[in-house]
Length: 150
Image (cartoon, rainbow, N blue to C red):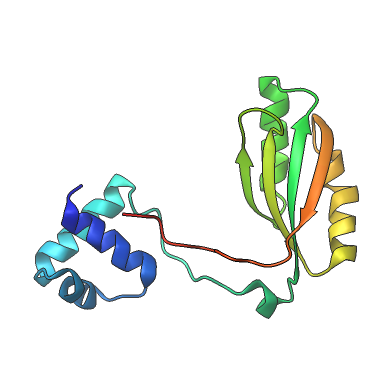
């Protein structure tokens, strides 16, 4: 990956709806080489996809919590069952497995505290292998969906 590829990635992170023509102009390439580089970046997996960034408040999702999970059991089957069940919860918009304690960090969005409590009681607390859940409420987003440094 060279400087031009990094420039292409930087521009697309700022505006994923750029046409190839506009992208080529921004990175100072002709259309064909820009298109070829773009396809190569997609094939190599550097570009995993394209999507719209949606405001959760516009969807009525005004409550956000960070949930820390410590596992009781961490054998392969339990972890696989836990992660599969977690992936099936649409309110979990981000999930990361961590080294150390806690074992997982989740970012959860719901419409309100009552909806979060229901999710917590009926789904999160019943996930396979969970020993402890700890939640922190998000007061305000300071940095969100920032482009990756290129």
